[in-house]
Image (cartoon, rainbow, N blue to C red):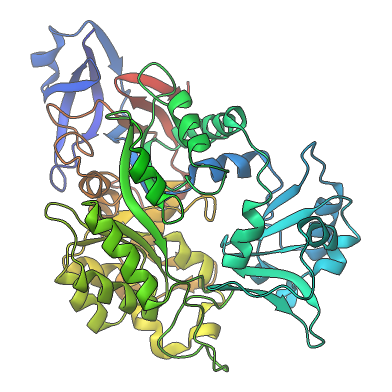
Length: 518
């Protein structure tokens, strides 16, 4: 059945300012664009946009989809800024699970950057509890959790992480990076059914923001990879919940996934690069820096040695695969570029540099010369602005979240949220890109990006990143009939009005999966 979309502002994203009067779609693809009168006769069904604005559906280029679903069902502390209220919420939180899992603790939101420890948590909880820091690179547990896991004062720090101790050598309950991963992995209490429910919850939420797809990393945190992978296959597809995902394969499960070579689902669940973690995050001072954090001799945390990193990159190349590397600090970026220069991406593929939060001129020049793209999270800027310079100092400000400079140097940037770390709403990221504005003012406004380029980061560029430039990210003949309809002209309204804009309809594969009836 051919469907005509008309009577709205339809941005094709082929070039800045280009619009179409009408779009005809059939069997999940765009047949062609043209004049309303020209296409009307062919239509079996018509959708009047009623003056609203239609774009290609959006894509989040870096997210943790299952974890987002869990956040939407769990106690989330992301916006809690009162310690008394936070303790009340934790004390009243109840589940029927073996563990209490609580997300989004952020000391930067609290007075004097208040940090709870395990002894305070002991007074609030009656079962093993893990409170995850907002960055998901650290968290803290209560004493019951340590006892349940058999962890005591004799525990050794794993490579690439540590168990925090106080001045007397006592465990505080705080754990970082690979130590955090060890604990989080042992809290898994899931099956395929529960993970499928998490996915469905997350996808329904993303529909409301005009998002039709995501590049996600979920294969290593929920037991054997087969369990989340099966949950994807049972949740997503042309006859299930319509949503398009690219699955990154974490370094821990990559070798087995290569050996097993499971069947994916073309156009819906696609195989993607090997995911590697090279450092932590600014909030926990574990992002790996060339120069120390202000007032310390600490340069952060290097999760893998050079040799281990090279071994993983070499393994990916032996399987004709690209890599996707978490790298927030400038030193982490340097180490990753060293490895890519030694083992370049296979022909026709590109490596992903994830976050790229702190760079310098030399690193950007090296990136230009390589087959790399960058998954960026614009709202990291607004979250970090109130405190990040205390950690880094003014001298490094020029290349902190330097999106315009990266773009001007020819780097492809994919817009993303890293949800549940940040809010999944793409308009928050686009607002940040075009204004550099947060709660504490405007930060480095020379790095502002124009509106069209900002929207490209959530439409055209993710398609290029996922090798889908022939079918996704544009409104053009032969492309997916995936659309986002907004209640106002998001290309022309005042930038601050982006924060009030709403998606009224999301279309995937020609089907309306979300709609608000005004």
